[in-house]
Image (cartoon, rainbow, N blue to C red; front, side):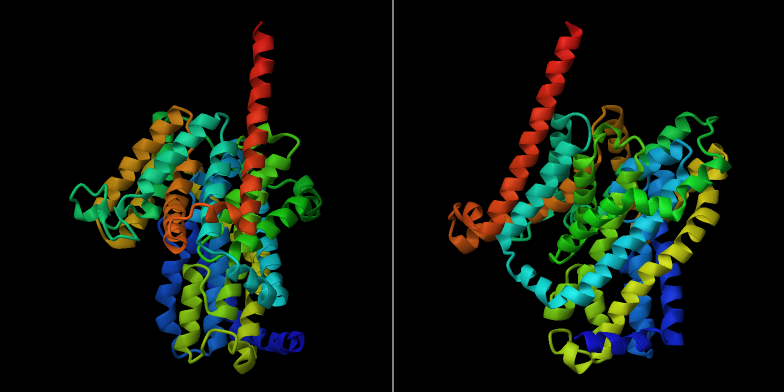
Length: 501
């Protein structure tokens, strides 16, 4: 295997391959940085154009768009509190507060390095551990996926925000929103009220941009003469050099990258879950967890390395078993089939140059982020924030509207976005965290479907949920988090009660 891997390196370093990597990475950063656009859309549009290309060049474009878009999503998340991609939700928690504190440049640089490190670790895992890690995927059944979804949902609700009850209520609201549409198991309509628009449920991108993008714009409009940003916000001081970042964050990068790789090999989990779990773990282990959410750069480092570490590892079940880990992995399988290559174990023996070359391309594009990412972020997109607030508010709204309209070409989507924007604005005013809402939309249906599948397979035997080893391990982790957070909340109440008396 390692001999084939080394033989494929010259293939990945061909001039045509290198050009496709640079072009794909730049396109990916741009796509990720524009709210409403996403890498799935970009790759789907690019695939037909690559039909006459060499497979290595076509896959180079895909690798560049994939890694570039994951980092690109962090740019508006940090600068405008708008997640460019769903995986950038956790980046907003500390990235935007850093910009408001005049540390936008440091936040962008931290995100760039973290994305690159996560992508590199993920690519190395794909190169060295693919066959072994693919077996882990086969060990997960519906009951394990149910507990993974519950673990992600409950841990975010408990760890994000200061009030556990508000976090749980936010998560419940997200689950209710996620249940709108056709039931995937029975085919029955739920909460559609006879409206054709709701049959397909709410589009995640519309919910995401509505909840996260509209409230900050409304807050800026309230203070139209306020000046939030200046040129100094995007300067990185000498003390924030690359070696300083490595010394400061290597533990966070290591831990978050491992979490991202583990989440990536689970089909359907996604970078959003990897980022949120990485953020939670960083917060749980930090000596000052109360600083998270107020502009702690460790939060940015954990979120970005976690979501990028999901990229290449999501290809592990795709390339080894032919089981796509996410939508982009499914498109990669489509790209291989377009060029006459059949995904699966035989791919490694019949076309080793292509499959191992693609692994090298994922590694090289992650490295390219260090050269291209910061330059694009600070010299292009960061300039938007130097506009007067009177221009920034309508410009941001127009960009959001264009992005949302391009998804389905439906004007109703714009009204739904504004409705979720008002909901998000109200939740912010009432100090309810928004992250559990979005995660509820993502993981609520996943938990429900896998629970019902488990019941169907086991013929309504509930004990199956608690007896399988992996499920039991996840339950223990979940119980540990709930007990530790409950104990912390109890101690805080006792301390405040003594202080008041």
